[in-house]
Amino acid sequence: MLDECSCLKAASQESRGDKRRRELVSAAYRLIEEKGFEGLRVRDVAAAAGVNIATLHYYFPDKEDLIRGVIEHIVQEFISDNAPIVHNTQMSAADQLQAVIANLENRVRDHAGMCVVLNEITSRAHRDASIHETLLEMEAGWRAHLSALIAAGHADGSIPPSTDAAGTASILTAMIRGLIIQAVYRLDKPDFQTIAKLVRDWIGGMRK
Amino acid sequence: MLDECSCLKAASQESRGDKRRRELVSAAYRLIEEKGFEGLRVRDVAAAAGVNIATLHYYFPDKEDLIRGVIEHIVQEFISDNAPIVHNTQMSAADQLQAVIANLENRVRDHAGMCVVLNEITSRAHRDASIHETLLEMEAGWRAHLSALIAAGHADGSIPPSTDAAGTASILTAMIRGLIIQAVYRLDKPDFQTIAKLVRDWIGGMRK
DNA sequence: TATAGTCAATCAATTGCTTGATTGGAGTCG
DNA sequence: CGACTCCAATCAAGCAATTGATTGACTATA
Figure 1: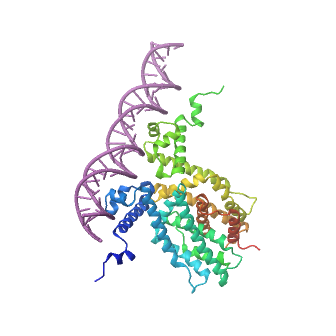
Figure 2: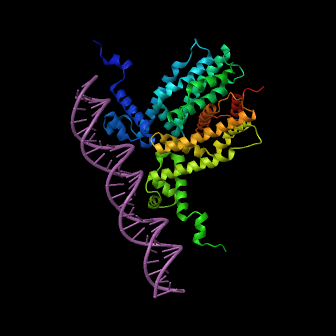
Figure 3: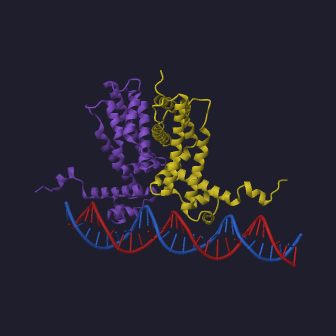
């Protein structure tokens, strides 16, 4: 039925090698989630992906290459996770902000693994300049997103102009990070609905 | 001059063994700060403490024992660091709360190492129940501290009764954690003075 | 057939831990 | 005092297992 000619496949479909690469990265990702970088062994990654160690090294010449692959993967996951939220013309900006925070509950539940791995990676940023740079970009993305939301609130009147967009976005980013850690590592059980309402009151000015 | 009789020394002074133990834990602590658990090697710890590996294992039968020692050490450091802040009758509770946050700037500067190690340990909490329990206690301590401060604010009138002490303390703990991570891992450069004022306004109700 | 992909076997280095011997200081007996 | 015992503390050497990486041969597929 379908034309399986390689020239057509090549454009949209991933090659066999790309698939392997993806499987290996995915296996590494799961192992980091489970045992941290501390317990990451290339042998285990290969076994989890169902291939020989030599095959792993064929795709990722050394362990650090594999880790770089995992980081690229998490960046993609992060981007595709956060992109769809923007631009909702139905709700006021303040409502959207509240929704973003309230939604963290689902986010943490569905992506606990990503949070764990992201935290492991953050520790590594301390010793690896390129990881540090990557995280800086992700962090800046979050801040820009929140900052834009607050600016939209200035425009639609749901957030008072006295609320500094950049500064508040910076604080919110910190708060969100802290809440995620509390939830993922079960150090507290944040009530995201209540928190979302509270933050909305803070940012948007008290409502009666 | 001094009576060096062992029976007198024993009561107050640490034994030779205790000193070694302390040196080894301290060396391990520094290495975790530098390389993470990922790069922690008992050989390196022994070398940094200037003793043979066998001597290390004489005091800490295995690596996990050493790590337990490091965790006990950081709990002590954390306690002795945070204890002195409580009970200041000169300032209003709201002012004290503001001061706590403004003070994070110095705290992060002077104890960046502790923050880094604490983060490494937090990752481990995911796989080690006893670490999880320890962190729960530390977290609860912070929350209780902040909660008490807010309750004091209810009493002295600097914080409106409508501000829920427990809930707000929980959020503040998350925010503080996030800010510390941002600062220590240089993902952002939080302006703690401004943030402290802002939070004070949020918690204490807007001032004109 | 040429090449990308895969594997069994293996290597050298690392790593947690052990062994057996040695040291030095505190207590004891003659 | 001085020879002797005892034991905590220390070390050099080494062991077995692990670990990241390589080699060279084999295979499927385009």
